[in-house]
Amino acid sequence: MTTFVDRVELHVAAGNGGHGCASVHREKFKPLGGPDGGNGGRGGDVMLVVDQSVTTLLDYHHKPHRSATNGKPGEGGNRSGKDGQDLILPVPDGTVVLDGAGNVLADLVGHGTSYVAAQGGRGGLGNAALASARRKAPGFALLGVPGDLQEIVLELKTVADVALVGYPSAGKSSLISVLSAAKPKIADYPFTTLVPNLGVVTAGETVYTIADVPGLIPGASQGKGLGLEFLRHVERCSVLVHVLDTATLESDRDPVSDLDIIEEELKQYGGLGNRPRIVVLNKIDVPDGKDLAEMVRPELEARGYGVFEVSAVAHTGLRELSFALADLVGRARAAKPKEEATRIVIRPKAVDDAGFTVVQEEDGLFRVRGEKPERWVRQTDFNNDEAVGYLADRLNRLGVEEELMKAGARTGDGVAIGPEENAVVFDWEPTVMAGAEMLGRRGEDHRFDAPRPAAQRRRDKQAERDEAEQEYDDFEPF
Image (cartoon, rainbow, N blue to C red):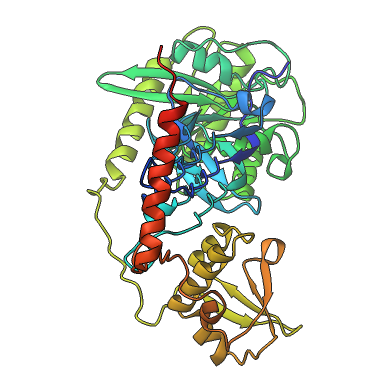
């Protein structure tokens, strides 16, 4: 059964925004009390948050589809809908977020670091929020915006100071078990270690973490064995330790050739050339191992490596190795640039940036792309003429009609707003300025401001008296 997963494909869906409400306040003797439709609630976000108690992506391997809740629609009486609840997904420290093409979206290092993987949709405005001096009684409301749908890849890269690399059965697991309190699986067959193991080592005043990376073999950087799956766990380590087996039973292997092969795999993987390295000649408790270690040590030192002869079984040479690693880790930490205080960067909008583009495609269709026009289209109820006219007014004020004219659009030309897979297409009518001639002064109710004739006022008052008398006649005392 799988117990460790360091790469998953995750499908996340943010919550949709709630629809706004179109409502008119009504009460006795006041049939037109004004618009009172509330706004829709915001859809919930999907957030990735680093949690130190999480060490694997196993949970997302079994449940790769996650979604936040939707916002509630608005109601009459100026009651806004409830916001959707954000979905918090805990991930291990060192998780990298990528898109489907392999581009890095976020690198989550440090407890509490967060990233919004999918943004919740905006709630639609109710007609109370859309009312103005010119539009006193809007007969429409805006729809909620759908939440984002994202397909992302999560990759875990172990956060450690020291990485132990080497052939299978070189003694890496035994070494980490005696240097720290880690208890990895240890056996006398290759590929005993199937997952990276972490241990904490204390050497004097320095405390550092050490990672046991599963055994590498020739071709690991191209996917042979387990190397490609776990080489990514070496990327964040400051120091690399070559653990070489001096008591191998394979006749075609020796410590120097093992070192050359592993170094070639690290070179092919890339990005590790500047890491300090030391060599550990392990298993010197075996007589032949001790002799071989003394034989190859001069050649390794001539190459510039710091060489340590140890025995994980006999606990020989461990103290010197531990303090040497602490010294290298301390130097690496001191060389890292200090984190600067967060600076607020203000990027003003360019004076010629309209916020949208108009492009004529090969088939003659004019396509409008931009955050605002596309969002406005999604918020429009096309079954309501007043809402369609309101959209036309917004697009006209944004300058879409002017840009269409500059691009050469003529009456009857097709215009699409949005991407190809989800666009609204219509025939352009430039002579009808934003639909004003067709719909008149949209959103106005003349009963609010136009003076009624005296005869009409008398009839209205008589109707109110008749209604009140009828209610009194129908009243039955207890």
